[in-house]
Every structure is written in C-alpha cells, then in structure tokens.
Image (cartoon, rainbow, N blue to C red; front, side, top):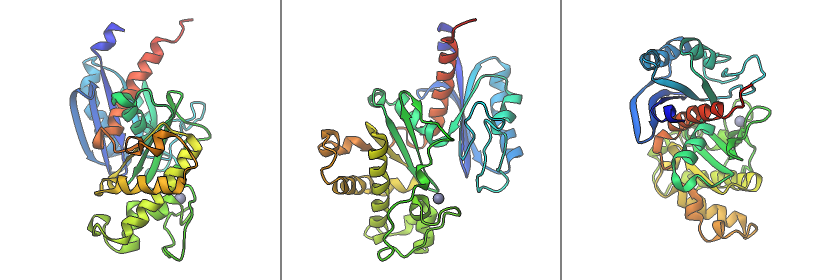
Length: 310
Ligand code: ZN
C-alpha cells in the first residue's frame, strides 16, 4: 500500500447546475480543483477530461470517483452501467458519462449517485461519523435525495434509493399546492424542493422571512421524510444538507418535529436526549459530494489491492 500513500485520486461531482472536479489525496491535501456550469454533455464531459488529462499523463492519477446526478444505472451487469438514465435535464437522458470519461482517462473509475457519494464523503472523512452504520445523508435543495450507507457501502438494489420521490402525507387543507413532480405531483420533492417552495410562494425560498409559514411547512415535510427514513433504515446518524437546510434554525425546527412525530415510539437515547448530534449539518459544507467521490476512488483501489490474484 506504500505507493498508494503518494497517489492522487480524482473526484467528479456532476450536479444539475455545476460540475466540480478535484484531485488530491484527502480533504487536507487537494492539489487542484475546478468548477464550471453543467452545459450540454459533450462540452461538459470534455471539460472534465481536460482537467484530469495532465495528471493522468504524468502518471499521478491512480483512480477516479464519479458522483452524478441521477437517476443513474449502477448495475454492473447492465449494458447501460455508468449512464445517466431518465433525467428530466434536457440533453442528458441516456448519456454514457462513465464510458466517455473512461475512454479518455484509462484508470479504474468508481461510479455512484451524488447523494450516495455525499454520504460516503461525510462518513469517510469526518472522524466522528466513521463507526456509524447505517448512515444517512439527505440533501434538500434544487432536488431532494438521500444516500444510505449500510454495512460500509451505499445501498444499491433495483437501482438506488429514491427517497426524494416517496409519497408523504399531504394535508390539502393546510397546503393546497398540488406539487410539481412530473411523475408524482405531490411526492416529497414535488412538495418540498427549493423550486416547489418557489412555485408555491412565488418567490425564491431565501426571500421568505424567517417567520413565514413556508418554513414551518418545509420543516414539517422534511421531518416526515426523516422519520420515514429513521423507521425504514434505522440510521445511526443523519446528515441534512443542501441549500434549503442552510436556512437559519432549520435543523432545530426539523429535530423538534421529528421528536414530536416520533411521540416516544423509538426509545433510543440518541434520539430522545441527543438529537442535536443525531440530525446534523454537513461537516464538509458544499464539498461532501466531490470529497465523497475522492473517497470512492480511494476505496476502489483498496478493494482492487485486496482482490485475490488468480
Ligand atoms: Zn416524484
């Protein structure tokens, strides 16, 4: 493993609006970093390749992790493994993101969703989180999504978790907004993403005053989603990130509602006495995803090292 100590890992986070690329060993030692807007696939992917090419040609780049907006195909046996699939983002349906990068940069590449990568980042690089498993990361911003780490790896399956699109209780009397998810209408994302707040109230969420009813409603929906996630996955810690979660007092408001809705049912002291340490803000700020991608690249090499030789 000695040679790995000097190696650089690449991290790519492709988001709906911007792409972040980073090269380094760990969060304390990043040697280069860039971000640019997500435009059409050929231009965007070329910029990613151009960023990594010098490191690759110098032989400094050992592996890459890709954290992509989704839905993506994570099934290794599928012909479209590594593709972005049915995204509503124009031009990005069925784009072979992994393949395009792999053909230009021939190093091992790990591929996962942006939220799974963010979960890996917060769990891998934040010392207090490392032993906590299952571990859940939820982002509430332009979209809503969550990644669940279970037994040390992100939970995959039929595709991957889609917590952003779960149906949640919708009190039409209190909230007549029909939601705007193109698939489900009033699913979680349809009711509680940043764009849905914008559509419901007619202004950007950050323009709503602290006392606006919209923040109570938002905290209610996110608390419902977290309670469902707590009962479903039994996470030992939840990181709640994304632009909406940065609103002042939002975490506290969500914590109070989770406790109230739980109504004493789960009797863990972690929840009942230490909820401030149970539902927390990201420690890596806006870098959870890209640093998680670097952790994915590192983990990939460690797993390859440990494969039995035939
Ligand atoms: Zn939906």
